[in-house]
Image (spheres, rainbow, N blue to C red):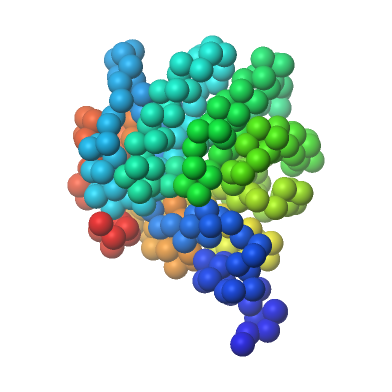
Length: 304
């Protein structure tokens, strides 16, 4: 039997199977730590096309899973774009339910950005509470992870921590049973996560967003070490290629061919950016659930 010191040195995805942790970790926390590869559906893509509402439908989500993805990330646009009503959240709820029915865990964000230089109004905070209550009451905590925002933009971690803690506290009151997700102050970057202390809420995981491609090759080793030291699951919940490769598919594919095997070796799940209506980081042809060919190394896709 490994010692406690030895157990803490193990990669978290492997350590999570240990019986000593079974009482400490929720099923969804263990499930997320052992994911492999998913994809983001950017903002409005999930629920509309050409300014018209739509529902992708169960068949689309089955195709998405058959393409080799084992989870999906979605986040809602800010309240200023959607209004405070629940019609648009209801459309996102349909997408979440369809994805879950296809067997896909969902990472679901309640809003887009929080800028230090543009603090939220009471309307924004009320919108967060309303959305968290809405999805907390209607989604399965064993399959859906909730995040307050897509990304924070703060000058320093000391300023971000109290806002992060307030966001988590508001979410926890509204959704007491769900796993919550949070990241570092600088667009959820890897370096900014390393500056963070853990929240008091024990039922959380951390996220990283990455667009460095093959640059700074040791960044994910540092993230994995932070994860193991803090016993906190981490998911790279946005992964693109390097900035400048947004529309250069060959360079983007070369980035993924280098980065994805490293993430797999370090047991860090990844969520590619993104299925999109736009031209930047557009993973799919049209509205197909399959990614473009030759973009993702086949060995990196999850078992179909």
